[in-house]
Image (cartoon, rainbow over all chains, first blue to last red; front, side, top):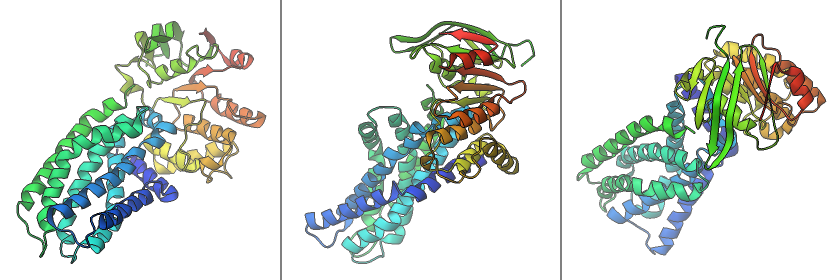
Length: 223
Length: 209
């Protein structure tokens, strides 16, 4: 199973590196939104709740661009059939796709978060404590995004359905991520009020959706 | 599966799409190692039948047993034992022919050394060795179909499902792919074709839909 997982993950990463269909669009979207916020809010600095909201929501919507495309090749180029005919547990595809999406989100943040800091933060002191927050948020978005992308891919209303189902399910993730990021992004340097609690909530959310994905993915690929 | 067990046994098989019956009352008993030709006009359910036999679609009614596995309940036992060549190549367009075949080999659990050897042998058999590193998007439809034929038999399936295997192929391609898909010793085949003469020449049994 490990070899099948690595084969599917390697295929996705190779195709993305070759075609650059998702990552540049995600990065460009995030940077553009930061520019719009900078001029729209007419502020050179953000802090606390507002900073956390701008960062989290922008990354979330940039992530949806990749989620919408996640299973297009499987649907149009026979990938679902390939996996369904092979002697393997189909959750391997879920794991590989969620891992690929997680890597896209991390790559996005390697570009977008420094740009966010450059535009809106006085110092880079908030960035290290943001790392575990964003990693847990990415994991949750990857797990639930992969699941919803599978459902949406089977539908003709793919582009509408993914955000429509996904966004309500992501509300707890957004609350927890913004809750953890808010004290870290306060003016005067990071604080850690309820930081551990919010990380625990994110970890719990990730755990629940990992189990849900494992339990239902096989059924989603059924006829 | 014992020698007496039919490779395919269908009794009153039906499959609906919404209110429309794509298949109805299909009866087949095909012994192992034989070839079944499925004939019929467009929309008669030929592709639907192949997808049911592959375990990709659930029957709506009736009984279907393939390689001794009752469908859909035992479909998991069928995985890895069926090769499916669709009338469209269904290959990843941004991977090369070689990469597509190696990926399929890894998903079927074929070890890497053996897989590399099989991939090269198969590409050579369909005269695609030189173009094997080209992305599928850069190949003609006929070339992609040759690669798809390689993928269908790469894991040496017991049952080969062929949906218009000559689609997009020129005379040379048809000959090469024909040699490849006819070559399995004791392999059971189901052949869907619009070429009635060819299908009848290859078939041990004919199903008209």
